[in-house]
Image 1 (tube, protein in one colour):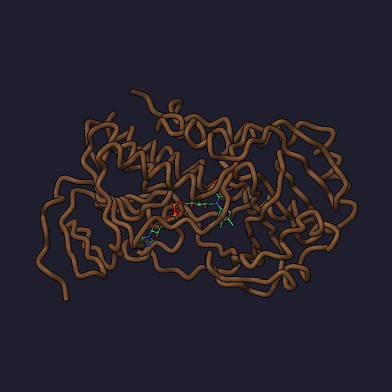
Image 2 (cartoon, helix red, strand yellow):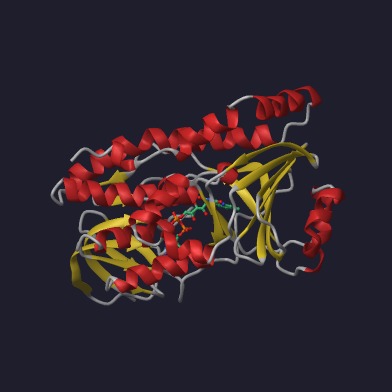
Length: 380
Ligand SMILES: Cc1cc2nc3c(=O)[nH]c(=O)nc-3n(C[C@H](O)[C@H](O)[C@H](O)COP(=O)(O)OP(=O)(O)OC[C@H]3O[C@@H](n4cnc5c(N)ncnc54)[C@H](O)[C@@H]3O)c2cc1C
């Protein structure tokens, strides 16, 4: 049973979801004294005991939020990425990527938002939206009138399904194992193999994130919480490679995530709602760009809003114009990267490894994605 509609937030941008995009948007708006409030379904910030890598394009936004140095202090310290093909080193490159835990990233973003007197309401799970009345209703029975709705509610966005589409996601054919284990490592390691690849990196000075993507018809649920076991992992990944991560054997915290694909993003707004991060453009994780794109989205939207003198419709149009091309290109490249990483044909594997070792292909790709700076797209 819903109570009467509360109008306290009529002038506010109501941010649904306190993940990477929601907290970043909140900080960016608060830094410019724009009224906003965050509604989060969980009773506290959720972080799922997992790692995340932030490439230079994402680091640039964290630096604009004034949180980059704090995050660096509690993160892994890497400057090199080493690529292996079935345990044989292909090449190594220097890389300016911040590797950390989601908990550290979320804690630092939340603390920053709160230090700016940001308001966040937990246990507010959005249930319904009336786009014409700008009214949002929550499972806890509360209903509110707001100035604008920012959908930052992640890959299974209720906002998106209510406002734009309710199409069912399709299993991509990939599942991803993940765990955090005690291990010392100072580089990012990529292990490419037939039908699988592994990425490992330090998230602080004593733990590493282990992520293994496998091509498999055994569909897993799309969830951070589905547990797997070491014996199942052994069926997917060669023993010799797993031996490099010996503490996995003792870990009871091994999870498996089914990677699903959704229709191509065609729009980033509708009437009084704008979409950010995974709610706007779900992406497979093979280029490690979902979180970085979420950071870029939030930064670009708030800067356009200021540039356009708080005209929301103009901001929405320009936001979509600037973002759609990059988002769709990276989404497509992420899927192709999965295929390239998992090649089985020995001739193609040879050609891939040769190109990685002897050409500028890695640098070319990373420069294009990592070199992006939103300031070049926003003209004041
Ligand atoms: C295995 C894996 C590895 C990845 N690795 C990387 C990486 O290395 N680098 C990278 O940049 N990206 C990576 N990503 C992608 C990245 O995690 C996401 O793109 C990013 O978290 C998206 O941020 P978001 O704010 O859009 O959504 P989320 O971080 O998912 O946040 C959504 C928030 O909304 C809340 N919420 C949901 N529904 C409601 C509701 N109805 N009402 C209120 N609140 C709600 C949730 O509780 C949550 O707090 C990876 C993804 C996966 C699956």
